[in-house]
Length: 493
Image 1 (cartoon, rainbow, N blue to C red):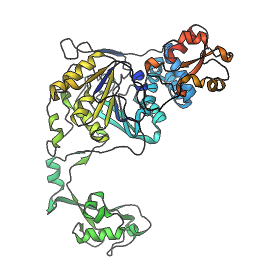
Image 2 (cartoon, one colour):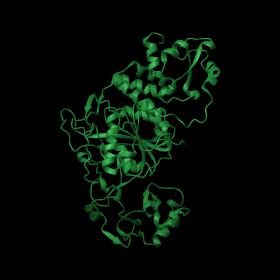
Image 3 (cartoon, rainbow, N blue to C red):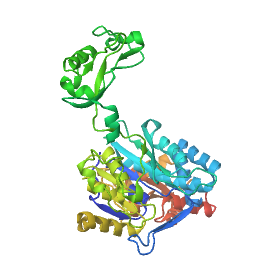
Image 4 (cartoon, one colour):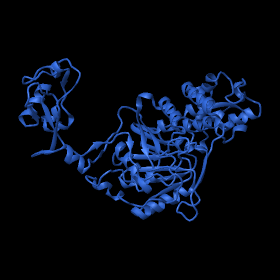
């Protein structure tokens, strides 16, 4: 795990691919990205709004550079290549271009995440199904956690030959099983509590619930206790997590029957009054219902995710009815980002938003004690985040605005790249990585695949041999631009 090679509260203006390539590996705890959706629309902030001047075209056309990127993906990840190619065949060249753009950036995001990190990709039904297959390939299908449906509006007038589209999708993946995850709860309504939790004791209101789970089990969880046999009714003892706080050391080291006896002696187990019944446990109200994968409507970009005003945590009350709109196209509410940041990061963690726009994720991260960085092509993003933080927290002076490319510091002390020439000549079998023609050793020159001016390092993995003519042609271009130029010139198939 590397230390970040940037300061907290850094906002970059530039291409996020170049900037992420210059960032240290495993230095990010949480990534939220709200990229263009390939919606075939053009967005612009209204004149007179705080975001005036912010605009982007969400239309994609396949270019030579895209094809070169696709060729690089084919060499490194044939499965990912096949997914993108299939999407192009079924949905057209525009979708193929869009997915290539996303794939090369998602590969960098995976490198940047710590093992305990997570990523939330915000999209809509236009490309969500294709993006999920990309993320399955890049992050691993086993690291898929949730497909969250966010109901972004209350109603939609677009009801002609379809149902009104009122939701977006968030694809939630982790880097590994070690992920940070603190799921919150939605408070119960007062009516629900009064209807269901009618009994009360010294611990509070409760209802009775089954102490057994479906299906039989081998071992003590399936054996009789105090005359009750769960196996005879096709069930087994299943002690709920909510009662663990009443057991010594949370029940660690205790057998099923020992836990049952301990809870019974404390009065948490209720025996049936009628023959044939099964023991029940006291289920107390608790703090609410754990969040599920459908998230509620947030009117007027004000960010409240709760269905009642009871049990709202003190550190989120600032969200209530707080006006947020700054006029930025596709702005998302603070309440949405609040839930993501609090669920999948800890205080002090580093949050990255590589398509930060008006920097809602950065503002939410600041509110809840996280470190953050944002990247956006538009200079308007830098102006907006400074303005928003100044208004809300007085942090105008502490935002670091950069337009350069960071240089990685996590690779250790590297030898001069010139010492690798013999190794690379053997690895490439004397063939130029540009025109693919064989040359004598003396005619080959060392080139940085990702140019040093765009954050490329002297690491062997970032070096290749080119003939003199190809090296002159490439200059400071990216590898993808260089390959596209070779194909245009007829020097490469």
